Length: 137
Ligand code: CMP
Image (tube, rainbow, N blue to C red; front, side, top):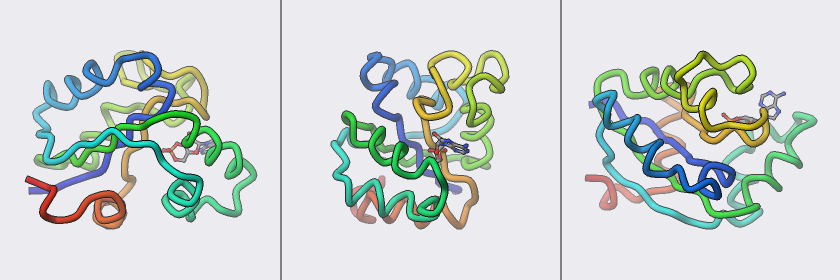
């Protein structure tokens, strides 16, 4: 069964909508195979988003991701990666379709409520970044 990684970002955790967002995954038929609330260190955030290290928004992205706790989750199901991306909506909430998580809960392209893996290959890398195999059920 396909797996993907979701991060509920500090803005959505601060708004107390973790349960609402996890319900959207479950309502769409995805299962929670592992989940954890945690505070990322600067080194964690820099390593996780290393692919964006040269982008002009990298510094702000890292500072935002360590501004409060996040909830990291392994989602499992048929086409889990693309299903999660459909549920999230566009990166910029102003462009996100109505009814998507970002349209409903995000404020800006930085504080955009959720991250989701953008390919099955990256999903495996991102899942292994946060979870040991024995933590995934
Ligand atoms: P995310 O899916 O977590 O991946 C990288 C994040 O960088 C992205 O969501 C946005 O929150 C943030 N970001 C800020 N500015 C941009 C931008 N111009 N293009 C893409 N991502 C951006």
